[in-house]
Amino acid sequence: MALAQADYYVPRTASITGARPLLDEAERAALVARIKALLKERDAALVAHYYVDASLQRIAEETGGFVSDSLEMARFGKEHPATTLVVAGVRFMGETAKILSPEKRVLMPTLEAECSLDLGCPADAFRAFCAEHPDRTVVVYSNTSVAVKALADYVVTSSIAVPLVTWLRDQGRKILWAPDRHLGDYIRRETGADMVLWDGSCVVHDEFRSRELEKLRKTHPAAAVLAHPESPRDVILQADVVGSTSQLIAAVQKRPESEFIVATDNRIFYKMQQAAPGKRLIEAPTGGHSATCRSCAHCPWMAMNDLSSLADTLEHGSNEIFVDEAERVKALVATQRMLDFAAAHRRRVVGDA
Ligand code: 13P
Ligand code: SF4
Image: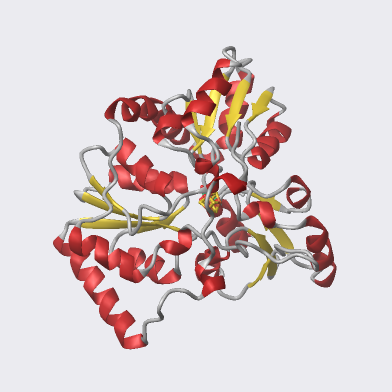
């Protein structure tokens, strides 16, 4: 079953440790210019997640790359003509790009950027879990290894999980879900599907605190609460909008409120502010009065992506993603089913918060 957090290493968030040397303005500008030139020279496109540092998101935007949630990252990488994709995010995002585009070179600023959901769901243990439930359709979250995806019937991201499981439920299918227990619990409540859940969690979203959120809402009564579905149930139950990162950004833009309490990684504020410049964004609380936060609303692995590591990767072609071909082919079947479903049900999936 799922590994306890103590069984794998969670790096300290850079914002807590302040460990990385700070570049001055001129050094940053020179590095950004070098990265932009290298992207051209290497025929590379930069695909970034909303949780990476704003400086990387900006480069992706300014060079014809892309910033998005995990579903759209996968789609963009597959459709873009560049021969090299540089994925700024966590390892499963780079692996998904490779699953879909084996002919492309996929690089990452660091190969150490993991995800607690992926780490907490090793393929051997997951295979045994599946064997205990042979009558169930296996649906896994995109935040998993290639080996786990290879065991699945369907891969989903948070933006597509509810419509896809609803569709499976309507066919009378019973579901085996992994690895995030909060997202699984949310999907089960939304769809009424018969689901057994793997017991994994995200180290970032698991820290949002419902009691503290209740107090914060009292001091901001006009604010809408936005939550990513990897958050605990008591946080989700207080949310006005529950959705993927793209769906939460769309909510800030479309909803009438001028204040939002946001329960997801705070690097998403860069895109939210861009989408709705006049609106006030408030971080949902991660620690009670007596507790200190560990990740403090920023993924410690997403934080490993920085300008220096991106420049190094492009300079040396380092940190290339390689995956086992037999596993890739199996994982592709489950991943492609997600993309086909998304294409057929597009209006229900993207930005529909
Ligand atoms: P999204 O697919 O909503 O971008 O989420 C990815 C993720 O890792 C959230 O923690
Ligand atoms: Fe994984 Fe959580 Fe980081 Fe997302 S925020 S990549 S789910 S550890």
